Image 1 (cartoon, rainbow, N blue to C red):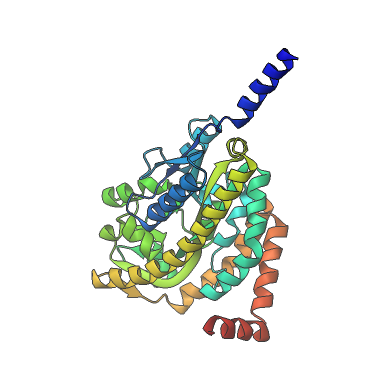
Image 2 (cartoon, rainbow, N blue to C red):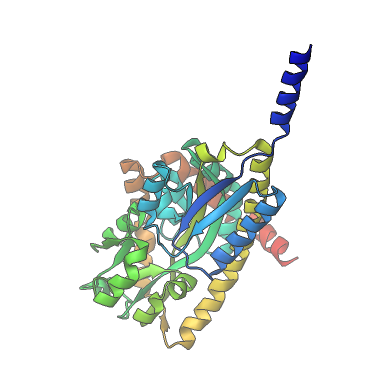
Length: 342
């Protein structure tokens, strides 16, 4: 009897021991002080408090852990547990996550909001199926062509050194479709490329150009959205499962809310950034109907090439188009506009 009592006491002590704290090591290209880092840190602090210190985050900002490709490699070997990665980098995990990057897919932010409401859960499920947990996508804004030269027609591209993100097959295909051989660089190497003359034409959001100091090396912004930019923080599912179910729920809730806030903040920041670029002397020019028309004309060709190469599945492309078609039905669009204004 005494032995049974001792065993029972020992088991009770083990059960009541506090859970061991677990830290997620997260890398990002975003510099400290940016809205991204500020909001992510707030989320991490709330998680630490609500889990009584059982779940913590340690961030490596400013690209100190390398580009997206390096970060993913370090996650796979366990040196890191997650990273904030742009859409082009995320395609190495789950190719269909790049669907929103197709050129001239969205006409307005309202279309973006409608389609994302329908498709984001599908994309999150795809990441999870491939071993990563995500808490949502953070909008980066629309990408615009930026250059040291005024580009109004396809002929103006002659002699330009155009950058595309490393591993971004969709952007590469888009430029190649109008006869441009782009230069592939990691996001962290773009500023150096602009400074050395390796590249002189880029595509990015207004807020991103300021945050990454690209605006110091460009003179013109072609004021026609080319594509939609976004990123996500992903965590190794293997690592995430080491957290209790209750704490997983807390992390998911807090970070999910964080990414919703980031969407709103980033959209507002991008509007302000456009004004800031103009105030700093960067000239905004409208693309010629010829160039704009050609971009729209090649969209179907890019889609076809991406599905043939397996970069995007036919199913994800059809799903996107279905939602766009529904939204662009006059009655639906009108209803959405009225809802937004109320």
